[in-house]
Length: 357
Image (cartoon, rainbow, N blue to C red; front, side, top):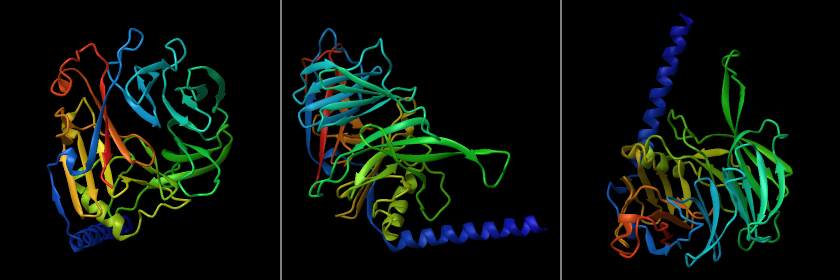
């Protein structure tokens, strides 16, 4: 009898939460569309054909990052260095060493801090010289590191400490069931020599409804000078209502101790959530909410590239932690219209999307 009453109370609670969520969403109607082109959200798209060399032949490019005129990217587990004209500079890592899991740029020291899958961290200079190797294995409860992020000082802030941030997962006993364990998300803060400064447990953002957050990989971003975590939504049809709820509850005010995992990232005037999976293209989506115009795009398959006509862009990725620019890569037939001389054997063309201010 007691279990039945508790079940009924839980059911009533869920109904009230969902009804409140619906009322909040209905009170803030905005225009939305399921179609969109890059020119709707971008002022400019810059094309950079990556130089093809005998010792640099890339089938694809991921984890693309920029430091002024320097471009870095990962292909086939290796880290490559180009300049912003597309000229190949050098390969930072070697196949004989390890596959790159993640990396961050330290622009002040002109260094690259690279992580492998074994909790080892390597320091390289921009010329590809290995300077130092360290291990994170002694940090407890650090397990299965997923994302690194370096937080440089934001503009106009006087001499704050510089840090490296990392998200990781760790098993812990369940409070509800002593015989089971649950997977927790953690945010770790290091100095640039990888001395641990702080550890913060992360939880899914309150969306006013039942939601299993952080099912996809967690990314790190910076807003208002502070670091926060973002994981694409598993329910893109709910993203507009979720966005309006977050805005109405002032949950996008990123502060120093912020510990919520948002289903979207903050990109200036835009709030963006994007997911792409080449193995299941029907799941690909790009959500973009324009806070200035109060207009939402929820585009299955991504925005149409009406700058270089490469087709839809499901794989739009942030180029920096501030989400001020995004990027994507294309090769072969996809770039024939804009670059008719490029062949299937040539390296991809990198496209940098400068968002509207």
